[in-house]
Length: 315
Image (cartoon, rainbow, N blue to C red):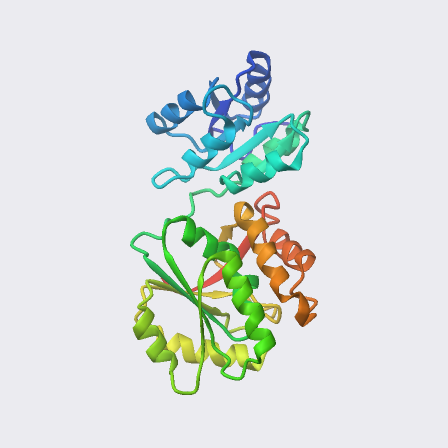
């Protein structure tokens, strides 16, 4: 029986300053059909990435000079967008959290199961996620408090990371003050602009004023009447926007069929902080446990990275 990986031939850059550890990693990966090159420090790895064609990076976090976190941040910069797995002997969660914030998709603690590493490499996206080329402003429509954070909180943070302006439009003109306060707090946590609907301002007027390059609305396949109604109204008003995506809500039905999955593991900590803003509403769907479990379920084919799913309406 062949032990060759389904990803046989994929080119992996291993970054490890320990010669013994680098040799071990290389041997394990090559035995499963991967092509491997190694670097012993972050700066060399970055130069090799730019000069070669690699499919993924496996890096130690404790490196001389440019450390693994700094390397991951550089590998996620504009023009690179690498798939990065970190391995570390540090057990303090702060190291793993710093790596995730820098863009690392998965963090493995040494000693780790080689099969787990192989599985993560095999589950990486076949092609890098498309850059939001030309995007400067993203607009998110929300029918209910918490919808924007639940459905695309991580994606909004990705937009902010890339220098985009993000606007959340709370579309319920009858939103009470307590709920509005929760929405404001969540927006402050994320660092996005929030606007509230009023009877005098139409959705068309909002779209014209914000002039988004990309927009997010609740999926049409939703069991909640207000969310379905917002989808219909916003989809019509956004018909000329270059990119329009439908996002998951707590009441999306089984008919929700995403064709775009955005990995938001690096943004998950901040997303969960924003979800805490809705604690006073006592909505069981707006809890950290439920939000994170949902993100992992949708990421089950991506090594259980946290994922936000979207339906492409216009693209």
